[in-house]
Amino acid sequence: MEKKMKGDKTDMGKVAIYPGSFDPLTYGHIDIVERALVIFDKVILAIAQDAEKKSLFTVEERVEMAKMIFKDSPNLIVDSFKGLLVTYVEKTNAMVLLRGLRATSDFEYEFHMASMNRSLSTHLDTLFMMTSKDYFFVSSRTIKEVAKLGGTVEGLVPDLVARRLKEKFKLPVTKKRLIGWDD
Ligand code: PNS
Image (cartoon, rainbow, N blue to C red):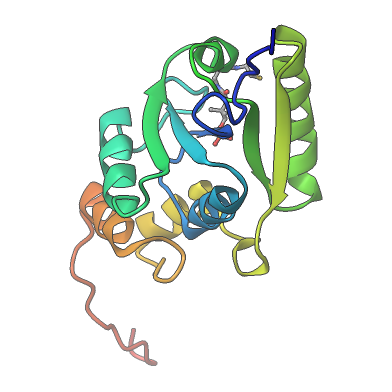
């Protein structure tokens, strides 16, 4: 009897899970999703509800933004999960985890996470995709820091995210202040 493999063609196509905090979603993440959709039939963007870090946006807000951003991508499914990632993966028909890799500085953290997940679930592989050169310096953490201090994040996150960041930080309308000798 032919064995039905998890995530293979006999089972709604090849499915990858792209997990993360996505707090908030950046063009770096979107670039990974778009490239992954060329390889996989379905990609599940799995937004962690209780990641170690304290999030700026609630999981509901992150899910809502992601659904709006990917509304024209039927093969991208937005979901959230709580607890162990491997437990969530077991409930899906995904064949691999997908993570973006920006630089060598990401490697250690990613290596530990992939190894731990592999140890918890021996058949689970993590696939890494290099971030495109335009987004090597983009991280959710720096986006939040720049936005909080009133800097522009235009071109690095979708307009929706940029607007929500402004709302979150209740940024005042900035006025130009000319700096001169009598300051
Ligand atoms: O975008 P992030 O914050 O780097 O994503 C990290 C995330 C959410 C993928 C990771 O923290 C995670 O999988 N959290 C769920 C809890 C878990 O399974 N931990 C064990 C893996 S080391």
